[in-house]
Length: 405
Image (tube, rainbow, N blue to C red):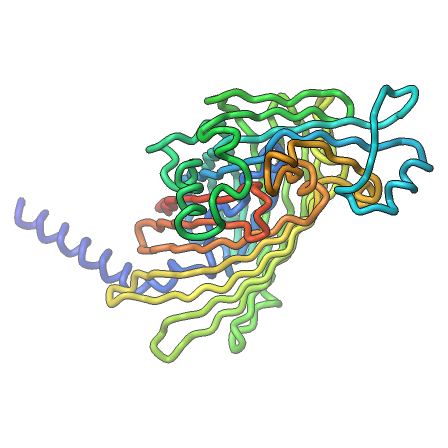
């Protein structure tokens, strides 16, 4: 009886292993990225859209656990938006850093006023479930949360102030080009006053739930081209933001195209291009903080990935992703805004707390996924080469596990 049981066990195990080896190529479903969204100090309060470069819904439900760490740094800066049309016209004739504006009070010099200071390592924790609905439809459900920290070692090994300033001092960027040492390393400040006088403030080790997201993707059969290996998917997205500063509902749409190139040695290249549009704060559940008066966030993203298979048909992949996102505030205000900060003490970047809200944000991400039938592990680091510090440097790691039917 025992021998018979052992024989059945090894027979079943052999069939399982053979089946896994036979189907291993199916575990590489296009470009399966973890969440690459930046830990932007406004963005974390909204449900932004991750582009989807898969070519089919997953065969089984998958669960992914992702941990992200980003260093955000903006010294204290004030912004004035004069209301008088003549003052606006006069200011528009001058470059922004030479504009004179002496605010006395709302009666004599009416203006909207804002201030911001961000100095923190923002950590994001995500749980994503991707559920195949039919042959062409997929549902994604995401829970996201955030921890605001000083970023001390060893919990922020690569994104701490010490690590970034060591890199600037010894490798690239020069000695403290943006004033971190001037304000002190491993400090924590997170405070923003909007144009309506509402204040968003977080303290060290504050933790909050960012919200829940529902993402539906449709993979049309008519678009699939077996010979040219071109695939597409279209998504619609609903995000429910649950923080006390921005309790609201967002809605968005996305479109993505993936090209697959198979080499003679069976290794592969994937090229992905995608775009999305989010209507943030479509519905506000209560009076919220003004996190940018541009109601739409548009993004454009591209990625190229090389996949190398092992003899056991597991894979190593190496990807480069470029992402551009539209501005948070309306561009027309750049004609007349006035910034005030400690520009004499800091060589550069003193204005970025508000300046970057009026410019398109862009970043590059370098991704390494390793996949096998049982799981996939992804590591990445993100750098903004425009040096807008939103964030300056970001790392992420993700574990994805398929659930058996």
